[in-house]
Image (cartoon, rainbow, N blue to C red):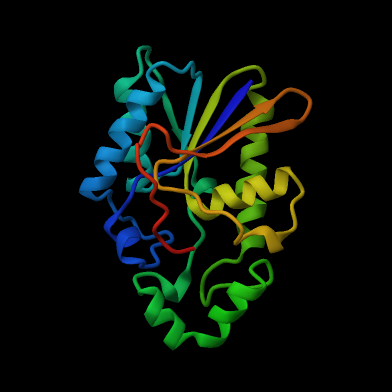
Length: 209
């Protein structure tokens, strides 16, 4: 059983280093090209199920896979895979957040698991909804190949949860827009590839988390 955790394509807010969270931001021109390449890549990979966050940027990314897929593939939308809510930070540049929310921003960088966005979520909230949803989809579809199209923080949290990684590891890696993380599952999860971007012929991990 193969499992793919896919980050959505680039948005203008990713490029600007602007917090977007649950704001419904569409793909940029570059993002559209990225997901076209992503779709072509998946056209030769067996898939049984495609699960997506319901935001525009993930919907567009999921649809790019469906458009290239040789067999009819249904997309299931699940709110539990939404990006972390950044609360009052959403719509603001990183430079603005550093200035206006200096104390909580520094705490977020130092102790991400203990931090919570003002009027938003913390990583514990994401873990409760997203990791449980991920395990539920996997358990209910054993033996099938599943792709999840979701967001940066969601993918990080799921990976750390299923591999029991300490949350101090949260800042130790980057996930590119339209990048793919590949898992295998039988009795336990095994990580086959992280941040696979060969289909993009580029490296891009802009954005803020």
